[in-house]
Structure formats: C-alpha cells, structure tokens
Image (tube, rainbow, N blue to C red; front, side, top):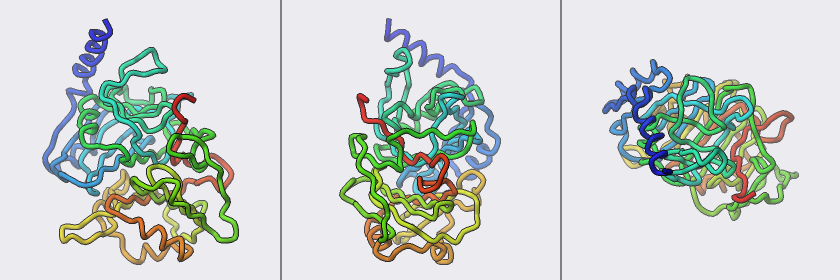
Length: 329
C-alpha cells in the first residue's frame, strides 16, 4: 500500500501544470527570455549553457524564484513555494548536507519529499512539492518535480545555496544558527570574541569542503565558513553604499587563469559574468594576517556573499548563515 500511495503522489506531480509548463532550452539567451515571464509552477532549464563547473543555487523569497548557476553562468530558473506563516524559510548561506531521491518526512505523516536536498538538520530542504503561487510549505523550498530531478542530478554534497529576501517579514534562527558556531555533527561549540586582535582564525574547525565568505556591510564584519562551519571572523572597513546583495565566485577562465566573477542575481542580471575589478576590491579593508590566511584557501568555486544583512554583531535578527540542529535532538 505504501508503494502504491507513493506512486500515486508522484503521478500527481507528473500530471500537474507545473510539470507541463517546464521548458528545456539549449541557449542562455532563450533561458533569459523565458525566465523573465515565469508564472507559478513554470521553470526553464538550459544546462548546455555551461556544461561543467561549480554549482550555486540562489533562492529569492521575495519573488518566489530560484536560480541555478554553474561555473558562474545561469542554467536554470524556476518558481518556488517557500515557508508559510509560522513555518518561514530561513535566509542565509547553506550547504547541501544530504541527498535522498525518495525521501519521506519523519515529521509530516511520512509524506513523500522527492529529490530532497537537505539544508538543515531540523527539516529545511529543497524538494519537489506543491506550487500554488505563494508560500505554503512548512519551511522547505518546493520545486517543480522535473526541475527538482534535474537539479538533483547536477549537485553534490557541499554545494552552496543562498536564500535571501523577505517573503513574510520574518527571519527564523535557532540556538545553533550561525553565528553561533557548531561542529561537524551539529553540536554547538564555544564562541569567541574578536578581542583586541580584531579577528579570529580557526581553520581546524572544518578542514575540508567549499569555502564561503560573507561580507556584512551593516556590521562591517567578514565571516569565513568551510562546509558551513565558521572558521574565521574579522572586523572590516567596507566602503560601499550599494544596498543590494551580490554573489561573486572564483572561476577558471578559458585561458586557465583564476578570476572573480559576478553571478547575475535577480535584479542584477547585467552583472552576470562581469569580472571583479580592483576598484571594488579596494573598498574592503581587512587586517593583513587575516586576509593572508583566507587568501591561502581560495580555490575554484569559492563564493563571496556581499549583503546588508547582519551577522550577529548588531541588535535584531541576524542572517541565518547556517541553521543546524544535531540529528536526534
């Protein structure tokens, strides 16, 4: 009976308007044209626009849109449904912690969550689900079934997922959210203040995995994470009056050289592929030893998020850079 029920639910996904309204394209130009006019349940997918390279997913809660980038190039855009009132989807920078194509919810009556990609241990994930055109999930990010399957096929553990926006005027955090550091099993570890040195650097907290750097213009702070664990934090002087958010990724160019390139986030599509120039770099000043430590970890796929959101040094609700509850808690 379980198998037949699961099959019935999957069939409902396949027969839904969201699936019928998907579009697979081969060019970035056609993707961009279709992406600008997506209606609830619709999506567009053009993996040939960038066949290889590091993947990053950007979720815009305000617009209920998710965008997938590979090697800095936009290859997919879809409508989503995020958390409803009382179950709001947290914002911040996450990494994919677990993948399960046939996952079932341990909280909501064993409900199927096809192509689940876990972002937090307390239940937030990307997966196929209902798309009514407004936030209606219990905190997860619902995707069209076929889009969810396509995304599942190109991601790996540790892929960066950035969630921003203000779908319901609320940001959820927990006692274990960054910037309250935790270890690889989701257990909290003792926090340390910056002190007179102006920075903390503890790379031993997480020795492998993707590197993400969060630059908070409101707090004048920089936080460095590896595999979602905070390994460094520093005071900074950030001379930037731009109120928008930007994501910059270290990529290898056609000539083989490494360069920082902008991702064309929604509202900043014109930045896509733009190379970070020295004038922008000079707007950020850090203690020299901290900068040298961070620079030594740069590899292709390293991501920088520049945001107005707080990272825990100012009053108010901080950005949830990683919200992790230890399994079994």
